[in-house]
Image 1 (cartoon, rainbow, N blue to C red):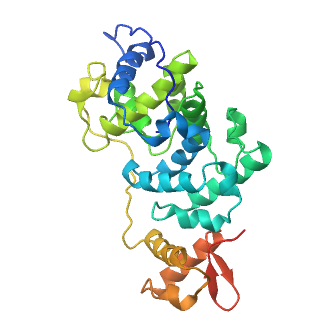
Image 2: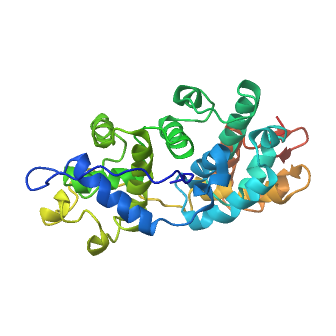
Image 3: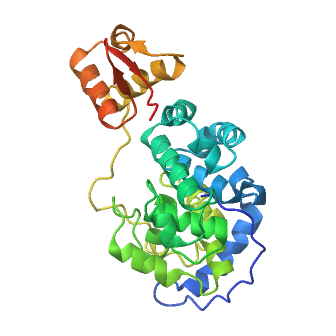
Length: 313
């Protein structure tokens, strides 16, 4: 969802979508034109964000909406404007600054990536896709997103929003599979524009279309620039008949307990006794399981005497 602002590339000419699923050429121009008019002004899309700003945003935006990310992102970049600035800090400080974004292992992974960038690449986020993929905590999606959005390269960038747009517009189903498939990757590669600037713009534009128009719960086909070609809409919007979609439950789960335990440790200025952690959740077995999980994940460091703190190493 993040990108700097490359110069506007020339658009490809759409082909005639009269029969069969729409081709990439028929989709590129309307989607990119729509993006040029409707893209949100987000800080990681500005040139001054640089590759590090793009990378930070991509870590934070995984499974987290933009409105929750914005304040944490701005505080993070003000404190750690370069990877080396973060690398000098203890990993626990990254967890502390992560606040309530959720899935705090992302903070540890981002800290690990910053350390590796500092040690291997002189403090500059590498532009090479393979070097990005070799960084700790960087998977295929994040490597492609940084290479595309920060450096204007040609890579398929498949997040949930893009997968949903492709599923509806090209495949004709309401929702993509729960996990990204080889068929989706092949389709994404087939739809990529040939030249790099247009491909990078297409990646951002198709992602924004899924975020703002072709949403999971209330698609706005009347605002969609490719609704006339959308296979799913033309088929009458058939209901999803695949495996049940995963829910995002939180209340009463181990995730909630972990969050409460971490909140105590983030707010503390030193080690915290077990008794302070015991007060945040009434059920002792679940509380102990959540705490053990935090320790196993490297998010909490146990000390002698029943004390706990955020990790220093």
